[in-house]
Length: 171
Image (cartoon, rainbow, N blue to C red):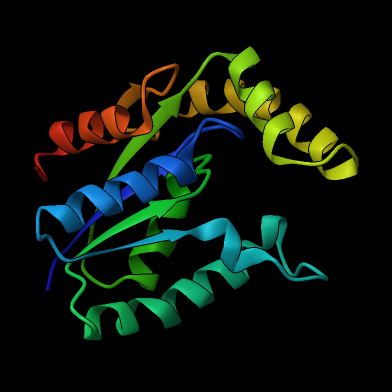
């Protein structure tokens, strides 16, 4: 069974989680069964067994998807940084039948930094994320993993979500 899967990627502070939640809401309002998962939440464990705890994330996604599917989800929205195409095979293992479309969300660097400062207390983690948003910007531009790109700047999150949904033909 095919699973239409939208993978939102982008650097730190670009709004992956926010747009995933808006897409989930828009699909629910349209009566389209779906599940949205902020994959970073599946990695919050220490010590880490792999880079960015990716092994744990894929194991958790593999365990979660059958539950979402058993409860009616037919489409899947995922939010996570994807640095290269090599990772896609692991997504397909975790979600059998996944037909993955990748949307790269972008936003100006100053806006991303502001978002990080609004949501995170000052300290080691925020400092790391501020450095990582700059580093990832270049990595993601070079990688070309995306099928399409959407700017998530000063527009309302719902407008950005509807833009994404329009581009993949889900609404």
